[in-house]
Length: 369
Image (cartoon, rainbow, N blue to C red):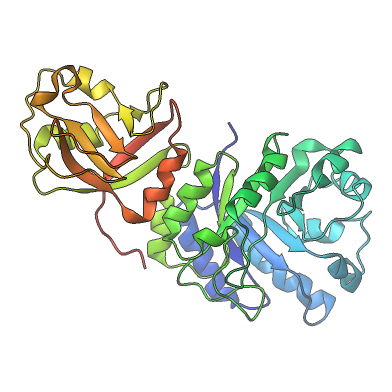
């Protein structure tokens, strides 16, 4: 499996060098290892532009970041750069360049053989046969990445089904992928409109860690990058705690939950049975591991709702202490309601498929903003 990374975005044309340094140092503290850096405009002379970018990239490199810089064809023209010579970007110290716009396929393939081993990152937010065209020109595949766009204007982010279709084009060919989440604090982006900078429209106003869980849960995204700067330290901390390889959902517990039920919720490695049903997600191993432990009925007379966590009580025979997550409302007094999936994360239940591994943790109600 490809190693999954967390990333930050830096906009040297719109930010302060010292503040950028502080932000990158804070990101390193929380395990961030990748930088998206925008170079969609050139202000001042070429020499000054080069110096400005070199100093922040050098600082990032010293901290162990991998920096990929976003460029458009007009930037090549403004800087007097030929596609046959990427030495300018090598001198900046970046790990790669992201092509904000496409060429003819042959050009991208040739770029991937640059002598500096710079990554050539493609725009992944188009559901066209762009990638196959490039690969058909025998591109240097290990140096081809894909990265989605972000969308500063509310209402313009990608719809989910379209995002999946675009991402599958890259992932089914084994290409490294990235997409953006949005800080609810950051105000800096490439343009003068900034309603947040996510890839997915449905994620725009979600807590940042829930956005990341969403992207990772698709199985189609390797790197999650915060699109806007500067995210708060609490947001960075929250992202650093996201499990990048399995879904971890927060649970609001019932007051009457007992010790064995709390153990059953938070301790086991849960997985959904392969022979699924539409009523509940069943995690059946707890009924085996805790079959001898008593569990008196409580909170068992109401109708259970989607997202409720229920555990079989002493009246449920062989199913005593089986954990279930409710998908379809129903009533069964042989089950105790012990908690509920956090409201922000309810939609993530759709990613728990047959045999999916998942964990459950207590929701501490911490405000990450």
